[in-house]
Length: 475
Image 1 (cartoon, rainbow, N blue to C red):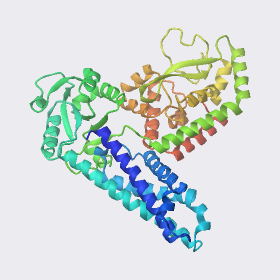
Image 2 (tube, rainbow, N blue to C red):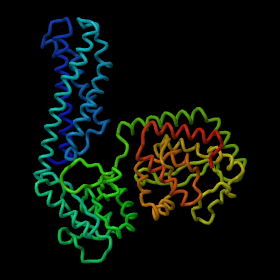
Image 3 (cartoon, rainbow, N blue to C red):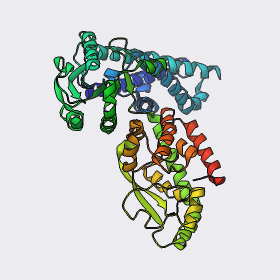
Image 4 (cartoon, rainbow, N blue to C red):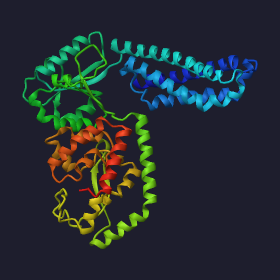
């Protein structure tokens, strides 16, 4: 069974299990809680029962999808899924109880005590079935991997002794656990002979990485870099972050001591997994809903302010009211960011990108006032409504400056994993960066943000942004 089909089977089993559990609960309630005599014939013709058998399982599938239960079943940790199943099961039972069961209290024989019996019955008919079916299926999936029937096409980046030792370790442990199917390795130094060529097929250099990833249908990449390979990491990460490929790296002792190495498998070499999805699905949906609600409300309520600012921009100097510029967004996708124009139309007449500064003589008098209170950023609520940006996220940059930053801080490409924002932790700390050094300093806070992203952190950043704006401390 291939990976896509197995996931569909897993979802289908969840649906059928939820339907069976709901049917069992319905019978339990009719037999033990309600005063009317139970009849199978009446039950099978009961519209409430039939509708529940159709919609309640759909509710469970959607709820599990919100909490990222439906990924590649062959990579799932059974202990992690057990904990997730119990937590989501408890949450779902509470939601169903208040949505569907509480209104049926008039049918109960023993008053409020039957509330507890109903809630307990809902949990006991659902959780044991769900846990049993899921663990059996995931155990079967794990056996498929161990037997080598399911594998993941994996590329090694690196060709030195470190990479060779890694492969020897993985192949030794993989004799009975067929997780990896190594397609070959990519070299960085371009100085044959390669120690790794004794074990794996040589595929080319890192400059050919995009084509190699496509031709070999690579699903995972393991970085096994030596110290002399690190000057190339900028280009490597740039290529990999534009692909939906799982990236793993050999940790240093420093990483281990800092507690960064989190692994689920006890076999093979310890590998750090670089997360490709930093935001869980439920939070992504919530964050997008907040973005739409707030930006639409702001654009509507403050439309008179927009008209006033547009009038002042037009009066301040010749040129357009709005200024649009291409920036790099989520997953490296370019988009046009919109601002009220705060500088002269010929601010970059020579064609070379220039950063602004506190005393920038290119800014108009009204432009300086707008920048002080960040009024020039207000059109970006339209970018948020369109989905190019979020309210909170790393500030979007031009590709030119991203490449400049990457010369010193290759991890800047990590920022492309989340949507850019109108405001950010780095923006609150530094305001407008006037040189690459300040942009790198601001990068530290943006990286901290994406590693600790949460609703509470977004709220804190928004509150601090209000203090900056109303205090006129924008730069």
